[in-house]
Length: 71
Image (tube, rainbow, N blue to C red; front, top):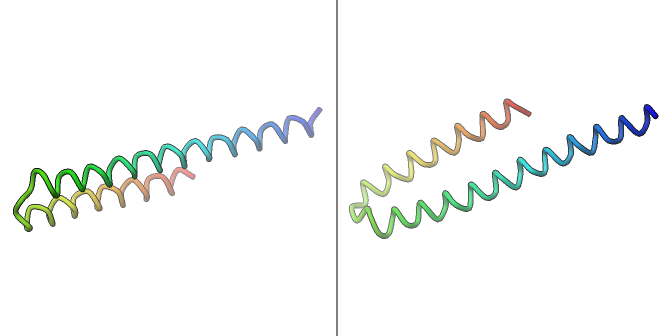
């Protein structure tokens, strides 16, 4: 009985990790397309594009550090 519980617990943790990774990949995909949209259609000025990309990249770094600190 204990062995089955331990295996179930491990599988649940593994599934949670896979879910976190898939959510992260989806968000990263969305953000990369958002960056392209902002760069090409909204911000025609190169300085604004750079500021926008810097802001988004800093936000992604914060998300990465928070995700790593939770795991």
